[in-house]
Length: 372
Image (cartoon, rainbow, N blue to C red):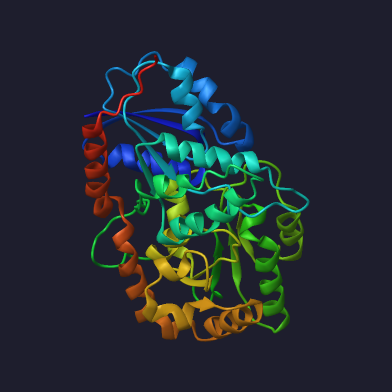
């Protein structure tokens, strides 16, 4: 079969997902993208770009897009035969946290709603995400002073499901081999998340400062993408922790990025928003021990047997567990290997059959939108 993937924000998890799906699917998937910047304008205007960019849809069995494009706008403007459509929700604008000083523009939430209504199939990237979306949807609709369309809740729910995004690593049963550790080198702490407010870098660096003040030694690799300005927290930390930082900035080479993860010992998240967590899953698979909040998607992706050791409840708990881990790192070798094995379930090769089955079922609907 043949599908068209329209990705309005080709970066980060959106890029990884599109590339992984295309490279692993048994079907042909053509990709048309826009750069990963100005996400608000992508939601407002990406459909206008794609309508003129795409010459024809008649040879496609289905259409795939992500939540940062208004699918309802695209289908309305296309006006010709439009194949069945699948929307993959990496995030949603009903629950996404606001940047400091920012007020919520409710139109983006309504764009999510109309996009989901226009789709024939809606997929969320975790159970945590779909639950958050449908928990917030009733209150969101109740903000309307009258004529509230509560019917949309069941209409969207009936065609929604959960399918984890695949990750770019092998699903081999044994943990991947790690680099030989440097002699007497302190543990290497990894940050491989986006350099943005919703990942709460302030809390991360505050925890490191507290650990440092207690006399514990560590090295630090600051990886991850930054789409616009470098946050002030990273600029300040580069000076304050310069003797401990061994890598600073995004690593474009996938191979070199994986090498850093294989050198890493501990991966930490202080995120306020995480619907899945590809960066964390990758780091664990390549051998890092996680320290993650006991909230968001993390309790879902980390096996329950590891929650007490590697999920923290508050900043104080993070500091205590990080100190203990640095001091006793060698005692966690078996758990590190077991965690690495557990992450293999998220490899693309383990998930692609489910995605292909969804696409094949989508193509069978042939729910064409006919103008007039």
